[in-house]
Length: 187
Image (cartoon, rainbow, N blue to C red; front, side):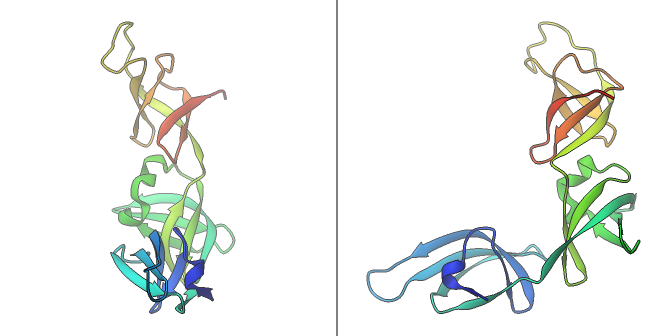
């Protein structure tokens, strides 16, 4: 059990049977009376957000969340299929649940999927992904519109700015947290 004094940003708690993450937290001590904890909460299932104020005597249950290591298999319409590496059970996540991580999804990629009970909520990618450049225009010296970088397209269709020496067919490493080029990968 959590007490109100344990509340902080990114803490995951359960309210009325649903998991919530605290997106903003503020401790307020009025001149008179007891301390208050103002929180912005986001429902991890529906994505809805609201503000709520808690008193110091309030208690909360930790959200019953667990992460499973799974392997990405294929897209099917607007859903993405993942397989549990231990039980070979398949789970589908929607495009909303995947979000921008679809830019880095390649076949057989191992990811961590967050579950609330049996319901999948979201996905965590490795910090770095190696992708092959499928389209790179030649870079002209003095092309100052994009600075010292040029845009390329990788195998997933994602466009990223890279240094001018990166060519079509090469593998590059991309940081999945920022979406930026890190380095070329030697095979």
